[in-house]
Length: 129
Image 1 (spheres, rainbow, N blue to C red):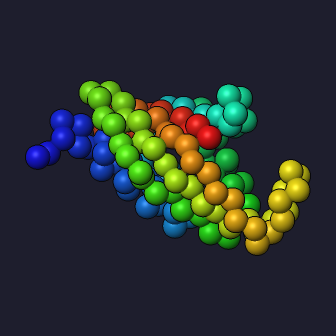
Image 2 (tube, rainbow, N blue to C red):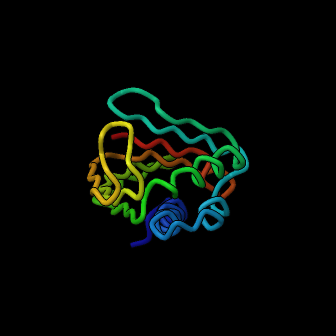
């Protein structure tokens, strides 16, 4: 059975494929020009961008931090306008971080992401961990 919002589901899967392979151009191609991205960790916003240029700058910065990274969908709940995605995340650091983690160490997180679509592009991405 095809989901009512299968276009959003397909966009999310394609976005994560591009993300996992460090393809920034591929990621940005899937974004609405007014993309609003937020990363929320422990209830605090630690990164936020508006528009594709700010998003690209953050994405280019983040690829320097990891030698490998992978987001895997555990579950996805679709409504007419949004998708909530339960995510398993693992990344291998390529640099030392201020929090004491060292290059080569593995960072594993579980979280969720909220996606919203407009004009068949992603217009909202909120990552929670």
